[in-house]
Amino acid sequence: MKNTIYLIGFMGTGKSTIAGYLKQNHGRQIIEMDQVIEEREKMTISRIFEEKGEEYFRSLETELLKELHGRTGLVVSCGGGTPLRASNVDIMHKGGWVVFLTATPETVYERVKNSHNRPLLEKDKNISFIASLMGERQERYEAAADIVITTDGRSAEEICQEIIRKIEEKMALID
Ligand code: S3P
Picture 1 (tube, rainbow, N blue to C red):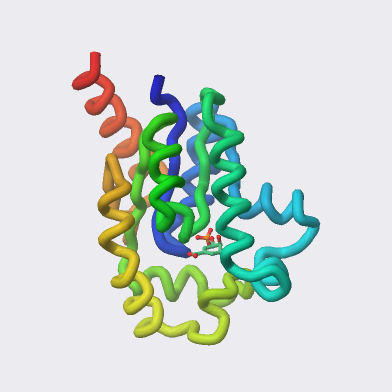
Picture 2: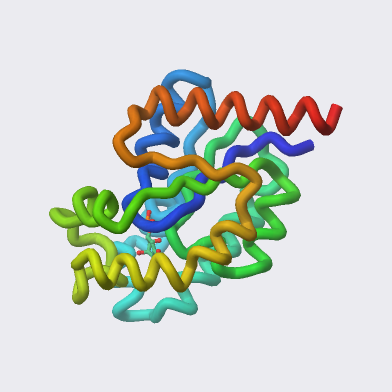
């Protein structure tokens, strides 16, 4: 039974904020993938990338998704790169609804410009690099998504209402 809500999307599209809102207002338990991985590895994401490499980090993401499969009532805030592996997307589709949050490169830049915990952006934190990496990933995000939601200039409440409504519409089609 599909139950988990998986939030995917580029860095800074609001996955953690929306997950927090779904926890508070819709009784979902949050799994913040980056945070779980940091706690388990006892290292920041930046250090994991630096010392063990991106592939190692990607394997930790896959392991975590496998573990979460079968649990109910979750909202999983995925890392921005989680849906780039096809096997991760397969696990997500079996367990729940994949919700792709979008934002323009300008919005993303505004949201990430003062943080330093995203190794892939640290050296090139500007709108044109964000636009180019987002462009490279766009097709895979879209292919993974059951539902696509724009976040620019919208409140968490508005976004969550749209998520819940669209999931209910999808579930009605299955019943
Ligand atoms: C990544 C996004 C980050 C984190 C890691 C890699 C990516 O998560 O998993 O830095 O490849 O887009 P957020 O999207 O939560 O920032």
